[in-house]
Length: 289
Ligand SMILES: *[C@@H]1O[C@H](CO)[C@@H](O)[C@H](O)[C@H]1NC(C)=O
Image (cartoon, rainbow, N blue to C red):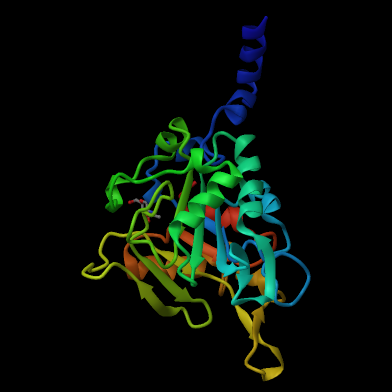
């Protein structure tokens, strides 16, 4: 009886949809992690209606919306790792372990999804403290640890990561050249494009690297200067155009410019307000899907 149902569903194509796709698409299973473009949520932990906040959806909502690349700023506060903007008195989204717990809960019920975290560590908090937060959130079991500093072609495919259940990749902003404990630090270069000018605003890379053949990330969000005070806040009003798949100033336009300069599409394009615009269409376009 079961096989009959399976057969019927196959005929109308349902089985294909419900089959174990990788990050939502069968075609991505055989692609190396280093050869996919992911739309990312910039400052994914700063959620709410205040002008300083970057996202409308909380991290679980971002994951449910298809976002698999999440960035967060970490700071040392009260002897713990907190998610704060510049200072914990300015914007404080609570402790890292709670945020990681939400991600882990989502990953538990979504076994075919590879999730990436880019954590900035401006306070140079010891990596062992991050490992404690990962342990506390129960997500250490999912972390991928590269065997060494990986060249572009050496990254596993999404299917490799899913099969091994090492589906959580962590990059750390200021420590990415070293590997420590269970936190995977595999990104060897981060080119941070300034969205406002579409020029490279800074490049972080291991000393001695010539930057060839490494993954790169693009910031694609606009800020506005509040009443010309020099205080920059996310430009929510322009997000529909900024986060569109195509058109002037869109994700597609910016990524295309970067691809011309770098010979490959960006590995991540970071957005504010991932629920505004058409992030998933842009991502599919960049992955040739
Ligand atoms: C993946 O490979 C294709 C074919 O070489 C290339 O066009 C594309 O830019 C690559 N994407 C990334 C993110 O490297």
